[in-house]
Image (cartoon, rainbow, N blue to C red):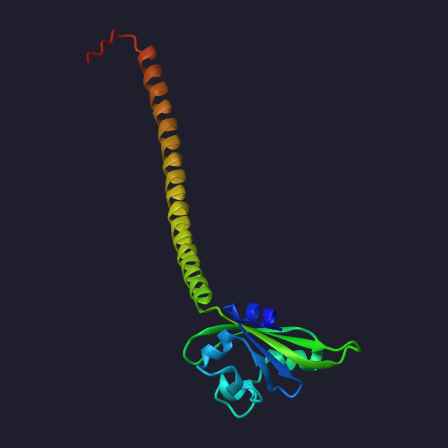
Length: 180
């Protein structure tokens, strides 16, 4: 028991163990420190009273869902203060598969969510810049295509003029001298 307590108390995640009626049976040091309470002061109380300052459980409580389904449940949740938490409820079952309690693992993921938001904003800005640059390049390509067509037409006209001039010179009976 001392080894388990030492291991669980070394975690930064909040670890809380509940009975099937959602009363706290045990909490690790991180969970206790998060509400500035001693472990013995948490025992027998309900999490929604302590961490959410509520009279009733949260609607999307993964611990209650784990108890009711017999399967692990997870949720990412933001507090009114803007802090993000990853919360996992895990059922504890006896040898017959009956749920006898639940564990809750909670981890502060605020920094991760903020980083995701920064990456998301940067991605959106990059997509806008790529779209703008693509439009600019498309317009430049169209302008170049038009210029190439104009030059081809001009080259054809020049060739026709050269042929006409050459034919005219060849048809002349008089001597013609062109001086540069």
